[in-house]
Image (tube, helix red, strand yellow):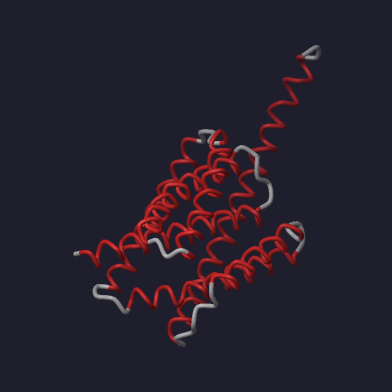
Length: 226
């Protein structure tokens, strides 16, 4: 404040550097996200083709949180990228039996395609909105954290106590929460809150995964009720 001339010179360079760093994180994130989505799709297709069984809720949770912990620890090294592929491949494998289940239902193929189309439309629409408006959605962080934790615990309760109505409610909540997380994380990258493309990729991938499975559950229920 006391050196306006120096500040006037430094500020544009700082802003340019920050924008350049954000653009680099965005580019790397979407490149890695695209490849991991393709990898997960391949593993899911292989799981469907081979009729592999679902590993179960315990193994799924241990595998997911174990790999997520490892990624967080090695996020700044090449091992972090390899672990991202391990996580997304594992999640693709667990997705295969779920897709197989819905494909076996009446209009199952249509249900799966509608869920895929809905997921793509929501992700592209929300990401595009966040990138073009550059609005700061950091205020959503606390709400999303609490909401995801509550929905996750409610989802576990719905599984263990076999409560279909609660399960549907959780799926609807996850559609909203994952949509919010896509906005939040994209905004976080733009405004420099997230500078690690490995962690940004994982957050967006998990958002897309949960969004797809939640839409699949809701659409599958709607089709079975017709």
